[in-house]
Length: 241
Ligand code: SAH
Image 1 (cartoon, protein in one colour):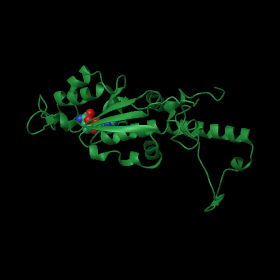
Image 2: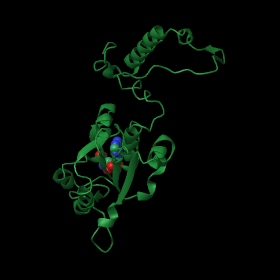
Image 3: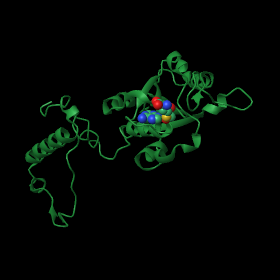
Image 4: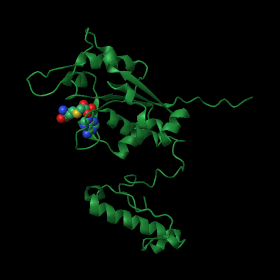
């Protein structure tokens, strides 16, 4: 009898966008790109414009109440979302938006443990509020700044997820030590040469004493986090944990 391996579906990202040609873009390179080729994850793009119903194929219109810019129409965006719901049942539906909850490594871990994502990339001033409410869309932000569109934000979110999929990153452990994983920023790294322009590598790293190295790295991580991101310190995981 042959061992029938359970055929697990790859983690899947579906991106609704007005700029399908931007994909896979950087996601087709390096670790994410190899994972895509290996079938560890899959990517589908959906052209929102394909769901426009008028003869000009318009996806946006002027805002009620006046003001600058254009707004993506609820009916068009809703139809694009609707086209993906049956095939991706139970997938989180996320609108990349500066009004969203800022993305964290914790949320990335949650998202990558699920089957995949449906991502809505905005353009112009954003999307008609009614479709966000009607579809119960989660808004996620990359940070407190404004991009010209959601595509780069979608790529960033997908990249953060797929690098955590088993088989994508080279070393099994390289995810666990990183910035944010223990609520701290990462300790500094050094490689050859041992002396560079008169700067030596910290002596402890050459000692071969793994206990001392671990303690030094922890202390450095705490020092850097206190200095740069004191807001993170309260949530840091203690060393014994
Ligand atoms: N008028 C909006 C900004 C629109 S920017 C506002 O002031 O809130 C156009 C699109 O870029 C948005 O619809 C969103 O999809 C994307 N975008 C811009 N900044 C972003 C950020 N910080 N995080 C995630 N997506 C962002």
